[in-house]
Length: 100
Image (cartoon, rainbow, N blue to C red; front, side):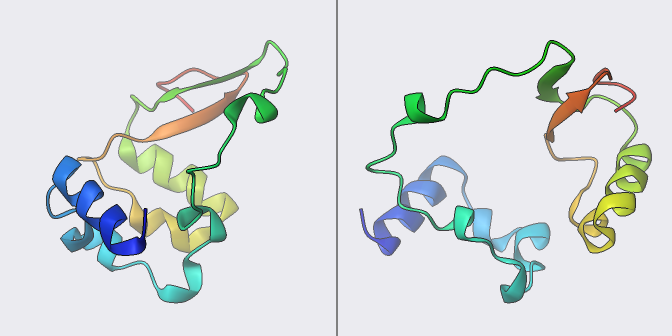
């Protein structure tokens, strides 16, 4: 799958994805390799990890302002990329989905 085919597929699944303000506001220098990796040869079983019992993952269900404050403590300029209309998938350590 080439770049144009990937864009077409994503756009058919999530119309106007690349027109969203939060996507368009990401500066080119913030783009990571993970965002453009070709996954046609990806083998997920190679990356299975045994995590400690206190580590969990899930969609954030708490207050968006609290999440932005937490993000800002780690990477200040990322906080502006989150808004209350998004589904935000997070990793948690000794925490729950409402309090982060």
